[in-house]
Image (spheres, rainbow over the protein chains, first blue to last red):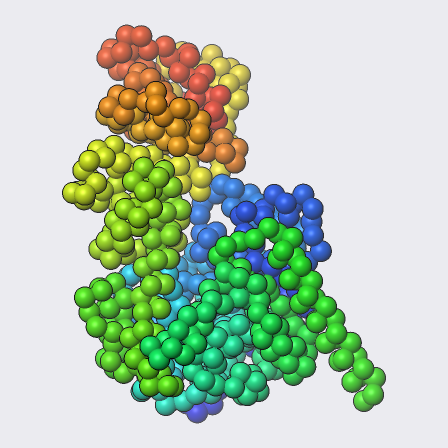
Length: 306
Length: 258
Protein backbone atom coordinates (compact mmCIF):
# COMPACT_ATOMS: atom_id res chain seq x y z
CA UNK A 1 0.00 0.00 0.00
CA UNK A 2 1.98 2.94 -1.30
CA UNK A 3 -0.16 5.53 0.45
CA UNK A 4 1.24 4.42 3.81
CA UNK A 5 4.90 4.56 2.84
CA UNK A 6 5.00 8.34 2.74
CA UNK A 7 6.68 9.70 5.88
CA UNK A 8 4.71 12.93 5.77
CA UNK A 9 1.61 13.13 8.01
CA UNK A 10 -1.47 12.24 6.03
CA UNK A 11 -4.28 14.75 6.17
CA UNK A 12 -6.72 12.28 4.72
CA UNK A 13 -8.80 14.71 2.69
CA UNK A 14 -10.88 15.78 5.72
CA UNK A 15 -10.57 19.19 7.34
CA UNK A 16 -7.93 19.40 10.05
CA UNK A 17 -9.42 19.33 13.49
CA UNK A 18 -10.12 22.62 15.24
CA UNK A 19 -10.56 21.84 18.92
CA UNK A 20 -12.57 24.97 19.72
CA UNK A 21 -14.97 24.79 16.76
CA UNK A 22 -17.08 21.98 18.21
CA UNK A 23 -19.01 21.74 21.46
CA UNK A 24 -19.51 24.68 23.81
CA UNK A 25 -17.02 24.76 26.67
CA UNK A 26 -19.50 23.64 29.31
CA UNK A 27 -20.59 20.48 31.08
CA UNK A 28 -22.99 18.15 29.27
CA UNK A 29 -24.88 14.94 29.97
CA UNK A 30 -25.48 11.66 28.23
CA UNK A 31 -29.13 11.69 27.09
CA UNK A 32 -31.25 8.82 28.43
CA UNK A 33 -34.83 7.98 27.37
CA UNK A 34 -35.80 7.90 31.08
CA UNK A 35 -35.15 11.65 31.18
CA UNK A 36 -36.65 12.79 27.82
CA UNK A 37 -39.82 14.29 29.26
CA UNK A 38 -38.27 15.94 32.30
CA UNK A 39 -35.62 17.59 30.15
CA UNK A 40 -38.22 19.09 27.82
CA UNK A 41 -40.42 20.18 30.70
CA UNK A 42 -37.65 21.80 32.76
CA UNK A 43 -34.93 22.68 30.18
CA UNK A 44 -32.09 22.41 32.73
CA UNK A 45 -29.03 24.59 32.29
CA UNK A 46 -26.51 22.41 30.47
CA UNK A 47 -23.90 22.91 27.76
CA UNK A 48 -24.94 19.99 25.55
CA UNK A 49 -26.32 16.45 25.36
CA UNK A 50 -24.56 13.41 23.97
CA UNK A 51 -26.22 10.32 22.47
CA UNK A 52 -24.96 6.95 21.29
CA UNK A 53 -25.37 6.96 17.52
CA UNK A 54 -26.57 3.35 17.29
CA UNK A 55 -29.57 3.94 19.58
CA UNK A 56 -31.00 6.44 17.10
CA UNK A 57 -30.50 4.37 13.94
CA UNK A 58 -34.21 3.59 13.81
CA UNK A 59 -36.83 4.88 11.35
CA UNK A 60 -39.08 6.91 13.62
CA UNK A 61 -41.02 6.90 16.86
CA UNK A 62 -40.35 8.39 20.31
CA UNK A 63 -36.53 8.40 20.14
CA UNK A 64 -36.49 10.73 17.14
CA UNK A 65 -39.49 12.66 18.45
CA UNK A 66 -37.70 13.56 21.67
CA UNK A 67 -34.19 13.98 20.28
CA UNK A 68 -35.51 16.38 17.63
CA UNK A 69 -37.14 18.54 20.30
CA UNK A 70 -34.22 18.39 22.69
CA UNK A 71 -31.87 19.28 19.83
CA UNK A 72 -33.87 22.51 19.34
CA UNK A 73 -32.73 23.62 22.80
CA UNK A 74 -29.22 22.14 23.18
CA UNK A 75 -26.07 21.50 21.14
CA UNK A 76 -25.57 17.80 20.46
CA UNK A 77 -22.66 15.40 20.47
CA UNK A 78 -23.06 12.09 18.64
CA UNK A 79 -20.88 9.34 20.03
CA UNK A 80 -20.53 6.07 18.12
CA UNK A 81 -19.85 2.68 19.66
CA UNK A 82 -20.19 0.45 16.59
CA UNK A 83 -17.77 1.58 13.88
CA UNK A 84 -14.99 -0.80 14.95
CA UNK A 85 -12.22 1.59 13.93
CA UNK A 86 -9.58 -0.66 15.48
CA UNK A 87 -10.86 -3.76 13.67
CA UNK A 88 -9.05 -5.99 11.18
CA UNK A 89 -12.05 -6.10 8.88
CA UNK A 90 -13.12 -3.25 6.59
CA UNK A 91 -15.52 -0.68 7.99
CA UNK A 92 -19.17 -1.63 7.50
CA UNK A 93 -20.34 0.57 4.61
CA UNK A 94 -24.00 0.23 5.63
CA UNK A 95 -23.19 1.43 9.11
CA UNK A 96 -21.17 4.34 7.79
CA UNK A 97 -24.15 5.32 5.62
CA UNK A 98 -26.52 5.13 8.58
CA UNK A 99 -24.12 7.32 10.52
CA UNK A 100 -23.92 9.86 7.71
CA UNK A 101 -27.74 10.07 7.59
CA UNK A 102 -27.94 10.53 11.36
CA UNK A 103 -25.34 13.30 11.35
CA UNK A 104 -27.05 14.92 8.42
CA UNK A 105 -30.37 14.88 10.26
CA UNK A 106 -29.15 16.23 13.60
CA UNK A 107 -26.11 18.34 12.62
CA UNK A 108 -24.23 17.60 15.85
CA UNK A 109 -21.46 19.90 17.04
CA UNK A 110 -19.21 16.88 17.47
CA UNK A 111 -18.88 13.26 16.35
CA UNK A 112 -16.65 10.83 18.23
CA UNK A 113 -15.74 7.15 18.22
CA UNK A 114 -13.38 4.79 20.05
CA UNK A 115 -9.90 3.41 19.65
CA UNK A 116 -11.23 -0.15 19.80
CA UNK A 117 -12.90 -2.85 17.74
CA UNK A 118 -16.46 -4.07 18.19
CA UNK A 119 -17.10 -6.27 15.15
CA UNK A 120 -15.36 -9.30 13.67
CA UNK A 121 -16.45 -10.30 10.20
CA UNK A 122 -20.16 -9.53 10.25
CA UNK A 123 -20.60 -10.32 13.96
CA UNK A 124 -21.20 -7.31 16.20
CA UNK A 125 -19.93 -7.88 19.74
CA UNK A 126 -21.31 -4.78 21.48
CA UNK A 127 -18.10 -4.22 23.44
CA UNK A 128 -15.02 -2.04 23.00
CA UNK A 129 -12.22 -4.54 22.48
CA UNK A 130 -8.49 -3.81 22.72
CA UNK A 131 -5.84 -3.91 20.01
CA UNK A 132 -2.07 -4.38 20.11
CA UNK A 133 -0.06 -1.24 19.50
CA UNK A 134 1.95 -2.16 16.42
CA UNK A 135 2.70 -0.39 13.14
CA UNK A 136 0.29 -2.53 11.12
CA UNK A 137 -2.62 -1.59 13.43
CA UNK A 138 -1.58 2.05 13.36
CA UNK A 139 -1.86 2.10 9.59
CA UNK A 140 -5.19 0.26 9.72
CA UNK A 141 -6.66 2.70 12.27
CA UNK A 142 -5.49 5.71 10.23
CA UNK A 143 -7.01 4.23 7.06
CA UNK A 144 -10.32 3.70 8.87
CA UNK A 145 -10.36 7.21 10.36
CA UNK A 146 -9.56 8.57 6.91
CA UNK A 147 -12.56 6.70 5.49
CA UNK A 148 -14.83 7.93 8.29
CA UNK A 149 -13.76 11.57 8.00
CA UNK A 150 -14.02 11.52 4.22
CA UNK A 151 -17.44 9.85 4.25
CA UNK A 152 -18.84 12.10 6.97
CA UNK A 153 -17.11 15.20 5.57
CA UNK A 154 -15.98 16.25 9.02
CA UNK A 155 -13.18 15.60 11.49
CA UNK A 156 -13.94 13.19 14.31
CA UNK A 157 -12.71 12.83 17.86
CA UNK A 158 -11.07 9.54 18.88
CA UNK A 159 -11.52 8.34 22.47
CA UNK A 160 -8.65 6.75 24.40
CA UNK A 161 -9.67 3.26 25.59
CA UNK A 162 -10.18 1.54 28.95
CA UNK A 163 -8.44 -1.84 28.81
CA UNK A 164 -8.03 -4.93 31.01
CA UNK A 165 -5.21 -6.77 29.19
CA UNK A 166 -2.05 -5.82 27.33
CA UNK A 167 -0.49 -7.53 24.31
CA UNK A 168 3.00 -9.04 24.36
CA UNK A 169 3.41 -8.02 20.71
CA UNK A 170 2.84 -4.28 21.31
CA UNK A 171 5.82 -2.25 20.19
CA UNK A 172 4.70 1.18 21.35
CA UNK A 173 2.97 2.80 24.29
CA UNK A 174 -0.73 3.58 23.99
CA UNK A 175 0.03 7.31 24.23
CA UNK A 176 2.54 7.07 21.36
CA UNK A 177 0.02 5.12 19.27
CA UNK A 178 -2.71 7.70 19.92
CA UNK A 179 -0.34 10.60 19.19
CA UNK A 180 0.64 9.01 15.87
CA UNK A 181 -3.00 8.41 14.91
CA UNK A 182 -3.88 12.02 15.64
CA UNK A 183 -0.89 13.38 13.78
CA UNK A 184 -1.38 11.18 10.71
CA UNK A 185 -5.19 11.35 10.46
CA UNK A 186 -5.90 14.88 11.60
CA UNK A 187 -8.61 13.69 13.99
CA UNK A 188 -9.09 15.21 17.44
CA UNK A 189 -8.83 13.59 20.86
CA UNK A 190 -11.72 12.75 23.15
CA UNK A 191 -9.90 12.67 26.47
CA UNK A 192 -11.69 10.10 28.63
CA UNK A 193 -10.37 10.71 32.14
CA UNK A 194 -12.15 7.68 33.60
CA UNK A 195 -10.62 5.43 30.93
CA UNK A 196 -7.20 6.82 31.76
CA UNK A 197 -7.67 6.15 35.45
CA UNK A 198 -9.10 2.65 34.85
CA UNK A 199 -6.35 1.64 32.40
CA UNK A 200 -3.55 3.09 34.52
CA UNK A 201 -4.73 1.23 37.65
CA UNK A 202 -5.16 -1.96 35.60
CA UNK A 203 -1.68 -1.71 34.09
CA UNK A 204 0.11 -0.05 37.02
CA UNK A 205 0.89 3.17 35.20
CA UNK A 206 0.98 6.77 36.39
CA UNK A 207 -2.21 8.43 35.06
CA UNK A 208 -0.69 11.90 35.40
CA UNK A 209 2.29 10.96 33.24
CA UNK A 210 -0.13 9.29 30.78
CA UNK A 211 -2.03 12.55 30.33
CA UNK A 212 1.21 14.51 29.84
CA UNK A 213 2.24 12.08 27.08
CA UNK A 214 -0.87 12.76 24.98
CA UNK A 215 -1.18 15.44 22.25
CA UNK A 216 -3.31 17.69 24.42
CA UNK A 217 -3.67 20.44 21.82
CA UNK A 218 -5.99 18.07 19.94
CA UNK A 219 -8.46 17.62 22.83
CA UNK A 220 -11.98 18.55 21.72
CA UNK A 221 -14.01 16.98 24.53
CA UNK A 222 -13.51 15.33 27.92
CA UNK A 223 -15.47 12.36 29.32
CA UNK A 224 -16.01 11.61 33.01
CA UNK A 225 -17.68 8.44 34.31
CA UNK A 226 -17.77 5.91 37.13
CA UNK A 227 -16.08 2.52 37.33
CA UNK A 228 -16.64 -0.79 39.18
CA UNK A 229 -14.02 -2.57 41.29
CA UNK A 230 -12.96 -6.18 40.68
CA UNK A 231 -9.81 -8.21 41.31
CA UNK A 232 -7.41 -9.93 38.94
CA UNK A 233 -5.97 -13.44 39.46
CA UNK A 234 -3.37 -12.10 41.90
CA UNK A 235 -5.97 -10.26 43.96
CA UNK A 236 -4.81 -6.88 42.63
CA UNK A 237 -7.38 -4.23 41.88
CA UNK A 238 -8.96 -4.47 38.42
CA UNK A 239 -11.21 -1.55 37.51
CA UNK A 240 -14.09 -2.02 35.09
CA UNK A 241 -15.29 0.87 32.91
CA UNK A 242 -18.92 0.28 33.82
CA UNK A 243 -20.48 3.78 33.61
CA UNK A 244 -22.77 2.55 36.38
CA UNK A 245 -21.85 4.82 39.29
CA UNK A 246 -20.91 8.39 40.19
CA UNK A 247 -17.57 9.84 39.06
CA UNK A 248 -14.92 8.77 41.61
CA UNK A 249 -12.92 11.30 43.64
CA UNK A 250 -9.64 10.13 42.05
CA UNK A 251 -11.13 10.82 38.60
CA UNK A 252 -12.24 14.31 39.63
CA UNK A 253 -8.68 15.03 40.80
CA UNK A 254 -7.24 13.76 37.54
CA UNK A 255 -9.78 15.93 35.68
CA UNK A 256 -8.63 19.07 37.54
CA UNK A 257 -5.07 18.21 36.62
CA UNK A 258 -6.02 17.72 32.97
CA UNK A 259 -7.87 21.06 32.91
CA UNK A 260 -4.70 22.81 34.14
CA UNK A 261 -2.80 21.37 31.17
CA UNK A 262 -5.50 21.49 28.49
CA UNK A 263 -7.55 24.49 29.56
CA UNK A 264 -11.35 24.31 29.81
CA UNK A 265 -12.99 21.87 27.35
CA UNK A 266 -16.53 20.59 26.84
CA UNK A 267 -16.99 17.89 29.49
CA UNK A 268 -19.49 15.04 29.51
CA UNK A 269 -20.83 13.14 32.51
CA UNK A 270 -21.43 9.62 31.13
CA UNK A 271 -23.89 7.25 32.75
CA UNK A 272 -25.09 4.13 30.92
CA UNK A 273 -26.10 1.71 33.69
CA UNK A 274 -28.13 2.06 36.90
CA UNK A 275 -29.43 5.38 35.58
CA UNK A 276 -30.28 7.66 38.54
CA UNK A 277 -32.83 10.50 38.56
CA UNK A 278 -31.87 13.41 36.31
CA UNK A 279 -31.20 15.69 39.30
CA UNK A 280 -28.36 13.46 40.50
CA UNK A 281 -26.66 13.69 37.10
CA UNK A 282 -27.30 17.44 36.92
CA UNK A 283 -25.51 17.81 40.28
CA UNK A 284 -22.49 15.98 38.82
CA UNK A 285 -22.57 18.19 35.75
CA UNK A 286 -22.58 21.28 38.01
CA UNK A 287 -19.45 20.00 39.73
CA UNK A 288 -17.76 19.70 36.32
CA UNK A 289 -19.06 23.17 35.40
CA UNK A 290 -17.51 24.69 38.58
CA UNK A 291 -14.14 23.14 37.74
CA UNK A 292 -14.45 24.36 34.14
CA UNK A 293 -15.21 27.86 35.40
CA UNK A 294 -12.18 27.76 37.70
CA UNK A 295 -10.03 26.58 34.79
CA UNK A 296 -11.21 29.40 32.54
CA UNK A 297 -10.55 31.93 35.33
CA UNK A 298 -7.01 30.57 35.53
CA UNK A 299 -6.59 31.02 31.80
CA UNK A 300 -7.78 34.62 32.08
CA UNK A 301 -5.36 35.34 34.94
CA UNK A 302 -2.48 33.87 32.94
CA UNK A 303 -3.45 35.91 29.89
CA UNK A 304 -3.72 39.09 31.99
CA UNK A 305 -0.20 38.54 33.34
CA UNK A 306 1.26 37.82 29.94
CA UNK B 1 -0.90 -13.71 18.72
CA UNK B 2 -2.72 -14.75 15.58
CA UNK B 3 -4.52 -11.48 15.06
CA UNK B 4 -8.04 -10.52 16.01
CA UNK B 5 -9.52 -13.94 15.20
CA UNK B 6 -7.74 -15.47 18.19
CA UNK B 7 -9.09 -12.77 20.52
CA UNK B 8 -12.56 -13.03 18.98
CA UNK B 9 -13.30 -16.77 18.99
CA UNK B 10 -13.23 -17.41 22.78
CA UNK B 11 -15.52 -14.43 23.43
CA UNK B 12 -18.49 -16.49 22.23
CA UNK B 13 -17.15 -19.98 22.95
CA UNK B 14 -16.68 -20.78 26.64
CA UNK B 15 -14.93 -24.06 25.73
CA UNK B 16 -12.00 -22.24 24.15
CA UNK B 17 -9.07 -21.10 26.31
CA UNK B 18 -8.30 -17.39 26.41
CA UNK B 19 -5.95 -16.20 23.64
CA UNK B 20 -2.19 -16.49 23.91
CA UNK B 21 -0.03 -13.39 23.89
CA UNK B 22 -1.87 -11.45 26.58
CA UNK B 23 0.10 -10.01 29.48
CA UNK B 24 -0.49 -8.30 32.81
CA UNK B 25 1.86 -5.99 34.71
CA UNK B 26 1.91 -8.21 37.83
CA UNK B 27 2.25 -11.53 36.01
CA UNK B 28 -1.28 -12.54 37.04
CA UNK B 29 -3.11 -15.05 34.84
CA UNK B 30 -4.46 -12.98 31.90
CA UNK B 31 -7.42 -15.40 31.59
CA UNK B 32 -9.15 -13.63 34.51
CA UNK B 33 -8.66 -10.26 32.83
CA UNK B 34 -9.77 -11.60 29.44
CA UNK B 35 -12.90 -12.92 31.16
CA UNK B 36 -14.01 -9.30 31.65
CA UNK B 37 -14.41 -9.00 27.86
CA UNK B 38 -16.13 -12.39 27.63
CA UNK B 39 -18.58 -11.33 30.29
CA UNK B 40 -19.15 -7.86 28.81
CA UNK B 41 -19.97 -9.27 25.37
CA UNK B 42 -22.36 -12.00 26.46
CA UNK B 43 -24.05 -10.20 29.35
CA UNK B 44 -24.59 -6.97 27.42
CA UNK B 45 -26.25 -8.93 24.61
CA UNK B 46 -28.40 -10.86 27.10
CA UNK B 47 -29.37 -7.49 28.60
CA UNK B 48 -30.37 -6.27 25.13
CA UNK B 49 -32.65 -9.31 24.75
CA UNK B 50 -34.09 -8.82 28.24
CA UNK B 51 -34.98 -5.23 27.26
CA UNK B 52 -36.84 -6.43 24.16
CA UNK B 53 -38.54 -9.45 25.79
CA UNK B 54 -39.51 -8.43 29.36
CA UNK B 55 -42.71 -10.51 29.57
CA UNK B 56 -41.04 -13.53 27.98
CA UNK B 57 -38.50 -13.22 30.78
CA UNK B 58 -41.19 -12.87 33.45
CA UNK B 59 -42.99 -15.98 32.23
CA UNK B 60 -39.95 -18.23 32.77
CA UNK B 61 -38.02 -16.25 35.40
CA UNK B 62 -34.79 -14.30 34.98
CA UNK B 63 -32.52 -17.26 35.70
CA UNK B 64 -34.06 -19.47 32.99
CA UNK B 65 -34.35 -16.59 30.53
CA UNK B 66 -30.73 -15.48 30.93
CA UNK B 67 -29.45 -19.05 30.56
CA UNK B 68 -31.54 -19.54 27.41
CA UNK B 69 -30.55 -16.12 26.06
CA UNK B 70 -26.87 -16.91 26.72
CA UNK B 71 -27.11 -19.99 24.47
CA UNK B 72 -28.93 -17.94 21.82
CA UNK B 73 -26.31 -15.14 21.97
CA UNK B 74 -23.47 -17.62 21.41
CA UNK B 75 -25.30 -19.38 18.56
CA UNK B 76 -26.73 -16.30 16.87
CA UNK B 77 -24.74 -13.19 17.80
CA UNK B 78 -25.95 -9.89 16.30
CA UNK B 79 -25.14 -9.07 12.67
CA UNK B 80 -26.03 -5.42 13.05
CA UNK B 81 -24.76 -2.63 15.27
CA UNK B 82 -28.37 -1.58 15.85
CA UNK B 83 -29.34 -3.73 18.82
CA UNK B 84 -32.92 -2.49 19.06
CA UNK B 85 -33.95 -5.31 16.72
CA UNK B 86 -31.56 -7.98 17.99
CA UNK B 87 -33.47 -11.18 18.71
CA UNK B 88 -35.68 -11.31 15.59
CA UNK B 89 -35.03 -15.06 15.52
CA UNK B 90 -35.45 -15.68 19.25
CA UNK B 91 -39.07 -16.93 18.85
CA UNK B 92 -37.96 -19.70 16.44
CA UNK B 93 -35.07 -20.50 18.77
CA UNK B 94 -37.49 -20.84 21.71
CA UNK B 95 -39.70 -23.20 19.68
CA UNK B 96 -36.76 -25.52 19.22
CA UNK B 97 -35.33 -25.15 22.71
CA UNK B 98 -36.44 -28.33 24.54
CA UNK B 99 -36.27 -26.89 28.10
CA UNK B 100 -38.89 -24.29 27.06
CA UNK B 101 -41.32 -26.91 25.68
CA UNK B 102 -43.37 -26.87 28.90
CA UNK B 103 -44.35 -23.25 28.11
CA UNK B 104 -45.74 -23.74 24.59
CA UNK B 105 -46.99 -20.14 24.28
CA UNK B 106 -43.56 -18.63 25.12
CA UNK B 107 -42.46 -18.22 21.48
CA UNK B 108 -45.66 -16.37 20.54
CA UNK B 109 -45.37 -14.05 23.54
CA UNK B 110 -41.84 -13.28 22.27
CA UNK B 111 -43.34 -12.61 18.80
CA UNK B 112 -45.76 -10.13 20.35
CA UNK B 113 -42.92 -8.36 22.15
CA UNK B 114 -40.96 -8.13 18.88
CA UNK B 115 -43.99 -6.52 17.21
CA UNK B 116 -44.11 -3.97 20.02
CA UNK B 117 -40.42 -3.03 19.56
CA UNK B 118 -40.85 -2.78 15.78
CA UNK B 119 -43.92 -0.59 16.23
CA UNK B 120 -42.09 1.62 18.75
CA UNK B 121 -39.24 2.39 16.32
CA UNK B 122 -41.20 2.25 13.03
CA UNK B 123 -41.26 5.19 10.63
CA UNK B 124 -43.63 8.06 11.34
CA UNK B 125 -46.50 8.53 8.90
CA UNK B 126 -49.53 10.69 8.38
CA UNK B 127 -52.83 9.12 9.25
CA UNK B 128 -56.38 9.79 8.11
CA UNK B 129 -59.05 10.95 10.46
CA UNK B 130 -62.09 8.67 10.30
CA UNK B 131 -64.18 11.46 8.69
CA UNK B 132 -61.63 12.02 5.92
CA UNK B 133 -61.58 8.31 5.24
CA UNK B 134 -65.38 8.20 5.03
CA UNK B 135 -65.37 11.23 2.73
CA UNK B 136 -62.76 9.72 0.40
CA UNK B 137 -64.49 6.35 0.26
CA UNK B 138 -67.85 8.04 -0.36
CA UNK B 139 -66.43 9.36 -3.63
CA UNK B 140 -65.47 5.99 -5.09
CA UNK B 141 -67.91 3.61 -6.69
CA UNK B 142 -65.81 0.47 -6.90
CA UNK B 143 -63.99 -0.59 -3.71
CA UNK B 144 -62.01 -3.16 -5.67
CA UNK B 145 -60.04 -0.26 -7.15
CA UNK B 146 -59.16 1.17 -3.72
CA UNK B 147 -55.91 0.32 -1.98
CA UNK B 148 -55.04 1.29 1.58
CA UNK B 149 -51.50 1.79 2.84
CA UNK B 150 -51.33 0.78 6.48
CA UNK B 151 -49.28 2.63 9.08
CA UNK B 152 -45.63 1.43 9.09
CA UNK B 153 -45.89 0.49 12.77
CA UNK B 154 -48.86 -1.86 12.26
CA UNK B 155 -48.21 -5.52 13.02
CA UNK B 156 -50.44 -8.58 13.35
CA UNK B 157 -50.19 -11.80 15.30
CA UNK B 158 -52.52 -14.77 15.21
CA UNK B 159 -51.77 -17.42 17.80
CA UNK B 160 -53.33 -20.67 19.07
CA UNK B 161 -52.56 -19.29 22.54
CA UNK B 162 -53.96 -16.39 24.52
CA UNK B 163 -50.72 -14.43 24.17
CA UNK B 164 -52.26 -10.98 24.37
CA UNK B 165 -54.22 -11.78 27.52
CA UNK B 166 -51.07 -13.28 29.04
CA UNK B 167 -49.08 -10.20 28.02
CA UNK B 168 -51.76 -7.87 29.42
CA UNK B 169 -51.84 -9.77 32.70
CA UNK B 170 -48.09 -9.14 33.03
CA UNK B 171 -48.68 -5.41 32.55
CA UNK B 172 -51.10 -5.46 35.47
CA UNK B 173 -53.90 -4.63 32.98
CA UNK B 174 -55.89 -7.81 33.58
CA UNK B 175 -56.02 -10.58 36.17
CA UNK B 176 -53.99 -13.61 35.13
CA UNK B 177 -56.22 -16.05 37.02
CA UNK B 178 -58.95 -15.52 34.42
CA UNK B 179 -56.67 -16.28 31.46
CA UNK B 180 -56.94 -19.62 29.66
CA UNK B 181 -53.60 -19.79 27.80
CA UNK B 182 -54.92 -22.37 25.33
CA UNK B 183 -57.52 -20.10 23.76
CA UNK B 184 -56.59 -18.70 20.32
CA UNK B 185 -56.15 -14.93 20.11
CA UNK B 186 -55.73 -12.46 17.27
CA UNK B 187 -53.83 -9.26 17.93
CA UNK B 188 -53.07 -5.95 16.30
CA UNK B 189 -50.04 -3.90 17.41
CA UNK B 190 -49.72 -0.28 16.38
CA UNK B 191 -48.09 2.92 17.57
CA UNK B 192 -50.63 5.67 18.23
CA UNK B 193 -48.77 8.93 18.70
CA UNK B 194 -45.83 7.88 20.87
CA UNK B 195 -47.54 4.92 22.54
CA UNK B 196 -47.53 1.35 21.28
CA UNK B 197 -50.97 -0.21 21.61
CA UNK B 198 -51.77 -3.91 21.76
CA UNK B 199 -55.38 -4.70 20.78
CA UNK B 200 -57.15 -8.04 20.69
CA UNK B 201 -59.28 -8.25 17.56
CA UNK B 202 -61.72 -10.83 16.30
CA UNK B 203 -60.68 -13.32 13.66
CA UNK B 204 -62.66 -11.60 10.89
CA UNK B 205 -61.03 -8.21 11.44
CA UNK B 206 -57.67 -9.95 11.69
CA UNK B 207 -58.26 -11.76 8.41
CA UNK B 208 -59.31 -8.49 6.74
CA UNK B 209 -56.29 -6.47 7.91
CA UNK B 210 -53.91 -9.28 6.95
CA UNK B 211 -55.35 -9.08 3.42
CA UNK B 212 -54.92 -5.31 3.28
CA UNK B 213 -51.39 -5.75 4.58
CA UNK B 214 -50.69 -8.18 1.75
CA UNK B 215 -51.76 -5.56 -0.79
CA UNK B 216 -55.26 -6.76 -1.66
CA UNK B 217 -57.71 -4.06 -2.73
CA UNK B 218 -60.25 -2.88 -0.18
CA UNK B 219 -63.12 -4.49 -2.10
CA UNK B 220 -61.37 -7.82 -2.53
CA UNK B 221 -60.21 -7.98 1.10
CA UNK B 222 -63.74 -7.21 2.25
CA UNK B 223 -65.41 -9.77 -0.03
CA UNK B 224 -62.95 -12.54 0.79
CA UNK B 225 -63.22 -11.91 4.51
CA UNK B 226 -66.99 -11.80 4.34
CA UNK B 227 -67.10 -15.09 2.45
CA UNK B 228 -65.25 -16.83 5.27
CA UNK B 229 -66.61 -14.82 8.21
CA UNK B 230 -70.20 -13.78 7.47
CA UNK B 231 -70.33 -11.65 10.63
CA UNK B 232 -67.64 -9.34 9.19
CA UNK B 233 -68.68 -5.66 8.96
CA UNK B 234 -66.56 -3.53 6.69
CA UNK B 235 -67.65 -0.16 8.10
CA UNK B 236 -66.86 -1.00 11.70
CA UNK B 237 -63.53 -2.65 10.76
CA UNK B 238 -62.47 0.45 8.82
CA UNK B 239 -63.64 2.70 11.64
CA UNK B 240 -61.56 0.69 14.11
CA UNK B 241 -58.47 0.94 11.90
CA UNK B 242 -58.93 4.65 11.21
CA UNK B 243 -59.51 5.44 14.87
CA UNK B 244 -56.09 3.93 15.68
CA UNK B 245 -54.43 5.88 12.87
CA UNK B 246 -53.81 2.62 11.05
CA UNK B 247 -54.45 3.97 7.54
CA UNK B 248 -51.79 6.30 6.22
CA UNK B 249 -52.71 6.46 2.54
CA UNK B 250 -55.66 5.76 0.23
CA UNK B 251 -55.09 5.14 -3.45
CA UNK B 252 -57.47 4.25 -6.23
CA UNK B 253 -56.48 2.03 -9.14
CA UNK B 254 -56.17 5.09 -11.37
CA UNK B 255 -53.71 6.82 -9.03
CA UNK B 256 -51.61 3.70 -8.76
CA UNK B 257 -51.30 3.46 -12.52
CA UNK B 258 -50.19 7.07 -12.94
